[in-house]
Image 1 (tube, rainbow, N blue to C red):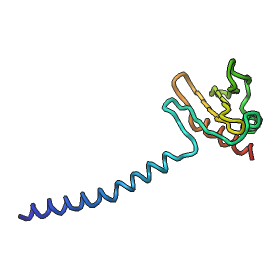
Image 2: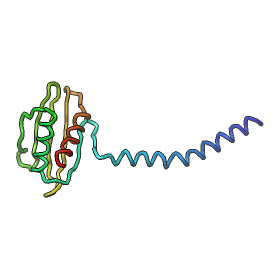
Image 3: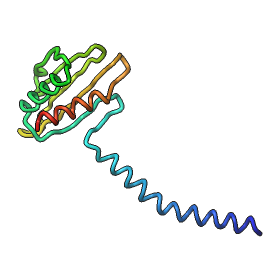
Image 4: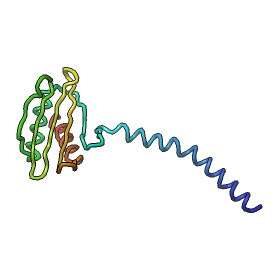
Amino acid sequence: MRNFWLVSLLFVIATTLTGCAAPLFATAAGVGGSAALTHTNNGITYRTFTAPTMKMRTATLSALSRMKIDVVAEGMVEKSNIRFVNAKTTDRNISIQLEPISVNTTRMRVTAKSSLFSYDSATAEEIIQQTKKSLG
């Protein structure tokens, strides 16, 4: 009889806590989902800015200069309005794309590769943060 009450008590506690846990997990998922930076599974970091593409280009080059990252090449992808900046450190290859969404909105895509299969999301995030700082 004692085990019956113990099992019943555990059942009541488990069902009661489930009601509290669901909103808690939903809130946590919402907070994580609304992060300013978005990552894909392959280490690419994205951010959309309210700024024209040319202003973003200037801010990106300024951020890379401040971070002492050498720009290897820059230009425009053929048959599109996407600007690119390729940069390099001693052990990272960095690829940045600036895609105009509208006249005053630009999506920035940053990839920092440390080897063929290894991506450095922290460096990509920092480039985006420094670009945001350059925008003022």
